[in-house]
Amino acid sequence: MFKDTKAFSGFSVNDMQKAKEFYHGTLGIEVEENNMGIMTLKIAGGADVVVYPKPNHEPATFTILNFTVGDVDKTVDELIAAGITFEQYDFGDMKTDEKGIMRGNGYGPDIAWFKDPAGNILSVLKKD
Image (cartoon, rainbow, N blue to C red; front, side, top):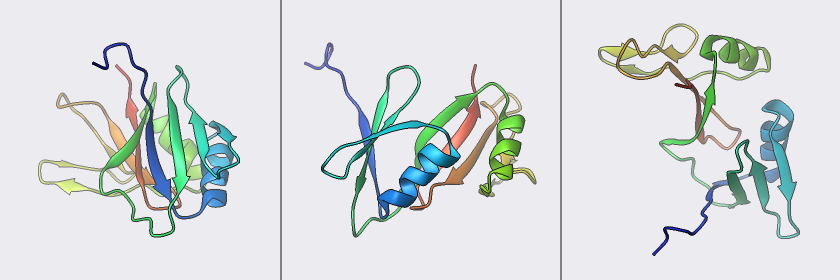
């Protein structure tokens, strides 16, 4: 049914101005805004992500957006310099290090999680 149908993803935030400043200003993503107060993140490769205001927004408890990067350490350092704080997780045998990076060590890619101003969880991870 949807084999040849394009799709896009979306998520809510509680403050569109803060979201725009974060996604465009801090992360450097091209954004477009429409007259209904909805913002589109123009992700490289042609995937668009819609960001919409929701007054009773509750942050997602899972990762809503993953950014693949060539060098996780370098990207984390750059984001820390831009004022971003990385999450600390402990999953028993797997936990984040002092920088907030969970090293894959053969179990998956290196990955680090951070939050947008609305509390939604994002990640940077090593691309294959």
